[in-house]
Length: 110
Length: 112
Image 1: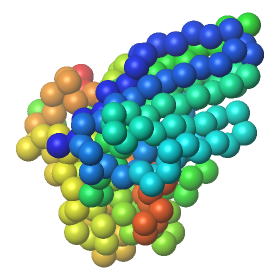
Image 2 (image 1 turned 30 degrees about the horizontal axis):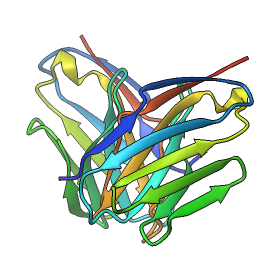
Image 3 (image 1 turned 180 degrees about the horizontal axis):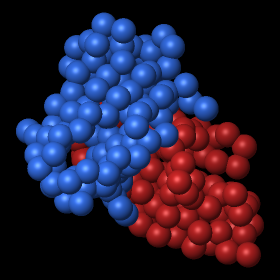
Image 4 (image 1 turned 135 degrees about the vertical axis):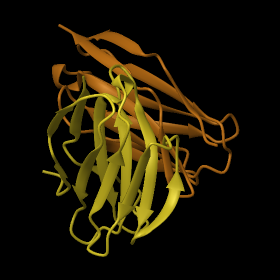
């Protein structure tokens, strides 16, 4: 079955700097790759997603890139702000299964 | 508010007991997903239903079972509970072919 690996597990960046989180997936048939943000004590919420027919997608300060050949995708957050502090999860979807990585705890340092 | 309702929000029970977690999806959503989130762990996929039928199964233990009813609400049944079953259980729903999951607030289960 599908397996999603996510790195790093913890990431600390200075406010204003960029953050990058990377994920790899195992099943080349996966065709949908969402990213979720979970703030402390809250439910996960979708922040951006990408489908397998697209290589890159941007939404203001966040962007996702997908390399189907290498089976990896990344989340990029630019100009980080204190409210970006949260746990971020990548996921890969195949045949009604949406499998999540273990998450990255992002700390924005003042 | 995601529109997904989960009850109960908190539940404390003893080992060996059985509990039922309930989820009402967003209006119009036919798919319901269940995930388990343990401390410092990711979101473990348990099971997915679409319009009353089981569509996909993850690493769901045999002690756990679920179903989706004709009114589209879903229940996750956990039996012979063990300490390790303590976790936050999320339900999520999605619309047809949209991909985005809308999560409920979760049911926090504590097994003592």
